[in-house]
Image (cartoon, rainbow, N blue to C red):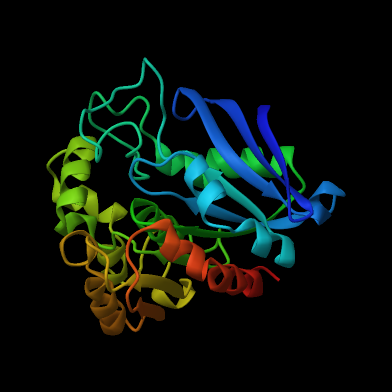
Length: 284
């Protein structure tokens, strides 16, 4: 690993690191906020943040204002890039496919299969790197926005024993049923819609939350914030689908519909403190 940025922030340190990833077959970057306790060598819990379409590791660390709350609660915050990048990594001219649009899946279809393995990167390689290279405990939570909200929900639903809590802002809850998801899943996984369900939060909840033999009772409660002035609300996000699936399955969901808020980081910055407090309680 090589540190390429470091900035003092709220008594801690906001950093950006790069490293060679064997999972995606290339260089990856991640932002990491280390609170004061971590700088002193004290082990701290970790919140992983997954960003949305077109984002890099920079969007969350520069726009969300999470450092203040991470410092308050003594939480390390890790924000990886949204996809592999580089001249040898396949791409698309469309913003919603290719570099910047990894969708947190393990692609099985060429030309994406070699590099686009963001699910394994987030679940396995990145935590191993963080817990081995920083004073990070194995107490983990996960959150995200839009495409990253989709990623956070799916990762948590499929790995309930690995995380203490999960939240999302404006998540794509049912990628199998909306244009963004249908395009990406078809490209990365092929046309078999059954294969898509492993990366669809609504499908996972509707299936009893089962993945790896886990039952609904073993799954984590979900916190979702959604703005009612979001331009993508009715076409791409459709949180009512998750709400209906959770009600039918008896799955605990806290869904906050925020009046007047859109899809931007102004929305995230307005409520990130509440999400950090939610995770801090679970990580304590």
